[in-house]
Length: 508
Image (cartoon, rainbow, N blue to C red):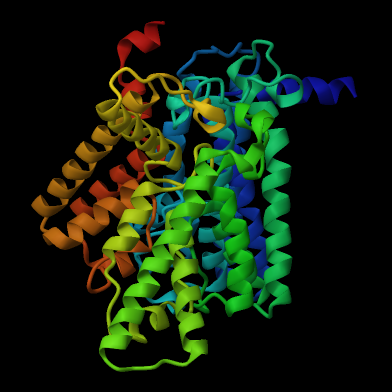
């Protein structure tokens, strides 16, 4: 028992990036086992040998590093997180390109980076080009990236007031008493360990429940597990079958997508949880408001178009169109990117096409803070909304004094100003990525869609955001490199990158 405890303590002393590398190497044995079961032996061997090689490298470096005391720095875990998103896909691409020798390594790296950042953009627009094992690996890498962001939000970003926590007031994880959220000072590794042991069972349990529920609707086991992992990670990665499996499967998936609207749907470590929970949570309420408003606007637009054309669609067609709009809006608001099987009905039953600009706007807004969703985040949007209401109120009543209320207490006094700074940095990043893509030869409209898709980590926008689907495989290497950097920037956010580049923060 003492030896086991000592070994566990030695493992936790290893560099964080090395631990992530070791976990990634061990995860390769899962697709290797599936490849054996599904008679895809060549692919199974590629993953088995890559996992074995990675595990040996991890053990050798771990032994060489044994006995060294770790350096606990404030930005050290953030740097490890950045390195994980940049360098781990290079390792994950090795078995991918070995199993699919008809593609180039840079394409495999792009595919793995897109999965790990939960973007979900794919170069392989023909799903039949990949076998079941490769589809499973893509979804598994995306699932691991989602878990990494769940843990990093609690243990890395929140203590540094990043990732949306910069606008909160006493709402970041770690402020309540007891358990994971003890007020006692913790080292970064202790925070990561406690967050992992608390959140990983929740994340895995939700995925398992969703997998079983989707299989109960009639989906094949592989498609069900890919959809389950993609929904929980908001990666939008699909298998080879295509489609979501019908309205019952979509309803189940939509219920689990709600976890990406607010952290309070799966955790109670924020100050709002003690003053009303989800009922007063600004993120969840704003997300539901958008979810109620946008489909109604789309449905009304279609209904008016059908009325002008003197068309009387059946009630079932109207309900199918409304559900298609509702599911798709929720999916893109949470930056998942799944499109309903009834989205075509929502677009065409009135004879009018729904512009992809709406989906781009939803992806830009994004989901909740400390979830797997990307985008600007609902809490920042809410902070700007509250500030706008206050400014208009002061125009009418210059000497008025307003109270924050239960929901507003989650925001600090300068939260709107910080949210505005982030919004401007996001806009500048969007402009820079768009300009770089156009200079590499991409058309302006396609560059706009690609920039939003990468910065908001909503890869399916490349298929539904433009007038015609964008084929990423046709982009040159320069454009792929630009999109790769944009996906890392969108996943970690601009403020985190600035923190890594600030010498004063490292000295402090």
